[in-house]
Length: 289
Image (cartoon, rainbow, N blue to C red):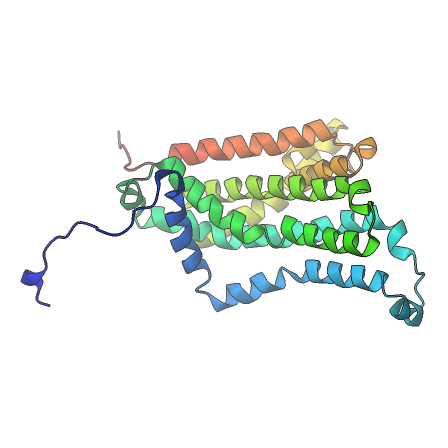
C-alpha cells in the first residue's frame, strides 16, 4: 500500500478495563524477557531448589529407598522446621539474580531511549507504569519462591496426612509472607536503581555492588559501634531475620543480634525510599532549569 493511501483510523478493538490496564505493560515486557533463550534456561535452573526439596520429601516417605541409603525412617520428621528454614534462602537467592537480570531492561531502556513519554501519553499514569513493571517481577519470582515453597509444604502435608498441615501452618505463612516481602523490596529497589542509572550494564553492576558492598559496610559499622545497627543496611540479613521470626518467634534475631522489628524497619524503609526515587524519576518530561 502506498503511503498516500494510508489514512488514520481510530482503534476499534476491545479496550482493557481501567483497573487492569497496567497488565498491557506487563504483557509486552514479559514477551521481551522470554525472547532470550539464555534467560529461559537460567530461569528454568532457578527451580532446582524446589525440585530438590520435592525429591527429599518424597525420599523421606519412601521406606524402601531409605533402607537402601541407610537413612533413618524418621529423619524428615525431626528436621521439618530446619529443612524449610534452609530451603528458603536457596529459593530467595536465585530470585534476586533474576531481578538483577530483568529489572534494568524494564525501565532503563525506556528512559535511555526517551520511551517513557510514549507510555504516559497513553491512558496510563505513573502508578500504572510502575505496577505493570513490578507485576513482571512478581510473576517471574513467585513460581521459584513462595509458590515452590508451598508446593514442597503441600507435598509434605499430603504424605504426613491428618492435621500435620494445620500443626505446621506457620511454615506456610512464613514462606508466603517472607517471599512476598522479599519480592516487593527487591523489585522496588532494582527498578529504582535502574531508573536512575539508565544503562543496563551499569545498573546491574550497581545492584550487585550495593548488596555486597553494603553487607561489608554494615559489618564495619557493627564492629565500630558494637551494636546491630549496621545490619539494618544489610537486606539479605534483614529478610533472614524476618523469616526466622515467622518460623520461630522465640528466636527472632540474626547472627549479629538484629531484632525482628529492626529487620522489618529495614525492609519497609528500603521499599518506601525506592518508591520515592521512582516517583521522582518517572516523569513524562524533564524540566531543565
